[in-house]
Length: 234
Image 1 (spheres, rainbow, N blue to C red):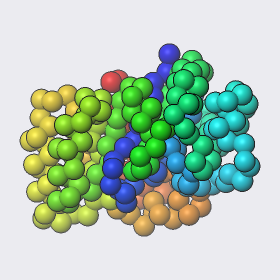
Image 2 (image 1 turned 90 degrees about the vertical axis):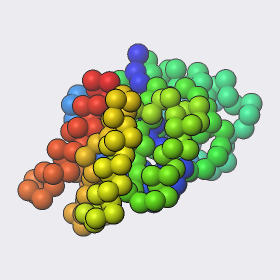
Image 3 (image 1 turned 90 degrees about the horizontal axis):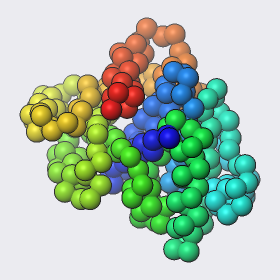
Image 4 (image 1 turned 180 degrees about the vertical axis):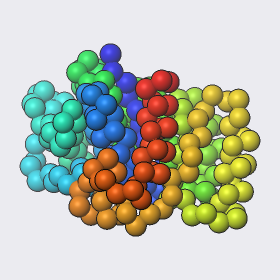
């Protein structure tokens, strides 16, 4: 039975979609069968992987009729596109059944969870197995972590990933404080992922960090290796 891993932060601009695509592709390259889904109709993760969604047959068709709408974007990695405003309260049972079927088919279902409230997000948080939280090392993001931990889904948080890291005195201090805060909690705090132009260039080309031989990307690959290890061994 597969696991649902949700990448979530209620704050935008913390690199959820970039994190989602690199995690999903990394797991796929390790020969796990992976499904990638975003919980809103922007389908950002798909675009960052070089794909595009134009059909009106997306996740709605999948949950209502089990129609095959998957887009195979890499070996072992399928994407399920979302349409606009398709989820209503009467669809909950079908959504639950759909995710149950996905868990039987895939080793991991990675959900790029948009910072909006909708029925799909609510259900995903209810059934997700683990939550990974990307944050920026700033005052608002670190304060938001405490609030997130206090909510029901806080018990499902397994990893905190400082993202878009700039090596400043204050960001180093925030990281140190978080390290102390999560010590002995069972929640993994990853090495900060540095902000880099190379990552932006790869995204523009629809590639992941695993699709370049540049020496400059090795640091990012090592950090993502830590995150993948936390998922696989968790």
